Image (cartoon, rainbow, N blue to C red; front, side, top):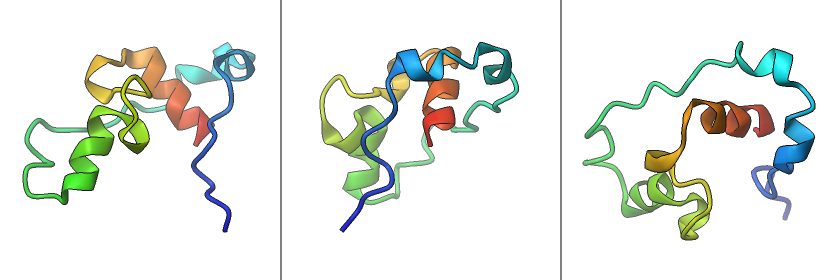
Length: 72
C-alpha cells in the first residue's frame, strides 16, 4: 500500500518556490484542541510519525509550517 504522506520532499526542493510560500496559510491550531483526541494524534503533533525530531509542531516556525503544507 502507498502512503501519500511520506516521504516529504526535501527542504531544498521546496525552497525552489520561495515566492509562493508566503501565500500558504498557517495552521489554525488552538492550544488544547488535541486534549480529547486519540493518543496517536497527540504524538504526531509533537513529532511526525511519532519520530523524535521529525517536524515537531511546537518547535516549528512559520516558514517550517508553510514548507510542510507545500509538501503535502
